[in-house]
View 1 (tube, rainbow, N blue to C red):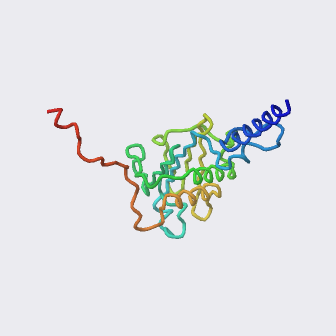
View 2: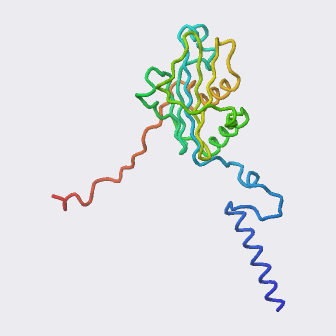
Length: 208
């Protein structure tokens, strides 16, 4: 009987340890939250589409000193694919080129920044709009961020009358996205599609 009790206790301990290692939910009553167990937690459907319309007259003054007022578009898909282009002349007709594939840690850090900026609060958001229907006002800078996460889709739209009066939240988000997309690094070769070469087709002669 004593041996059976010892084996049962050992089995329970192993099961608890296996659950923690596998990333499962923490045992009840331990006081450990899911966020503490998985610091890289991010919504599986997290995506971001940020467009910056900058009037030429506004951005021409200090193009190197104010990157947050440069026209551009960032598209981040839930698989980590980050697209960027410094032009938004026809955003509805062309997908920006792929720059890189973000790691899960980068995705989580970006989601954390969005939460810190209050952009995950749907009560302050606006319904997601089509980029084609947006008409930026002349002489100003317009930001439109469309986000998805946890089964929801929402948008934040901000407007700056001049580079001297930027929106703090959008400025931080644009700066982080530019860093992730290597937008300010010269000579960066965009990431192309990954294609594997397995050599000649061994079954080609049988298809003739």
